[in-house]
Image (cartoon, rainbow, N blue to C red):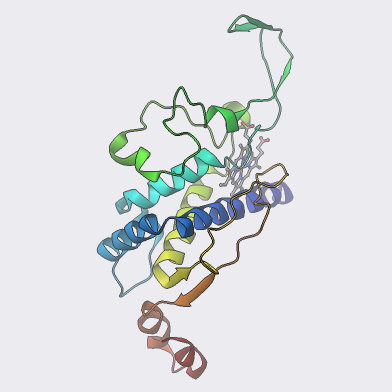
Length: 218
Ligand code: HEM
């Protein structure tokens, strides 16, 4: 049971953070908006906490947009039909093993405008309400880690934005090619430059007279 949770919860979560950071780095406006929101609602005197997520709508939009474009289980796990059904003229007998193409559902051009574009704003002010997204699957085998994943990815992303200044390695955009694998990994792992933010000084150095950290922070 523990192994199942660990296996199912690690790559999915790490990939989601990596994709989010890749897009944020390619779109400085998104980074500025996320930083501004965190500055405004959390400030620079303390680290962001899980409970702050409720006051960070734009960060939530980023999270939703990443899960839309890169659902950690693009075909879910195989499901089985419980009874005979007809879906759009296709007969599906009871007991059929079904793969649900979430990747396509989330990029359906009939539902999403510019479906392949990373645009967190599409989730602002409930604009995406009623549009179907199932990044954590559905039914009895739906991801049991959904609550944890949403909290931890939000917290990780928010803390990364709050604590560091981020830069791409050069002028080139981050490569967004998708690799092969069950959980949509990046083909080229993200490499990035970062610098601890001033916030580090007030939070981490206030408790200890740590020379090493002190030297690190500009
Ligand atoms: C962003 C992070 C995550 C994503 C996108 C994700 C997505 C999914 C998806 C799509 C499924 C298959 C659901 C279905 O077929 O209906 C699944 C199953 C599962 N997930 Fe997650 N997951 C994430 C994080 C986690 C975490 C953090 C844990 C545990 C700590 C976890 C534990 C599991 C387990 C145990 C299953 C198998 C459930 C079963 O077969 O009954 N997941 N997940």
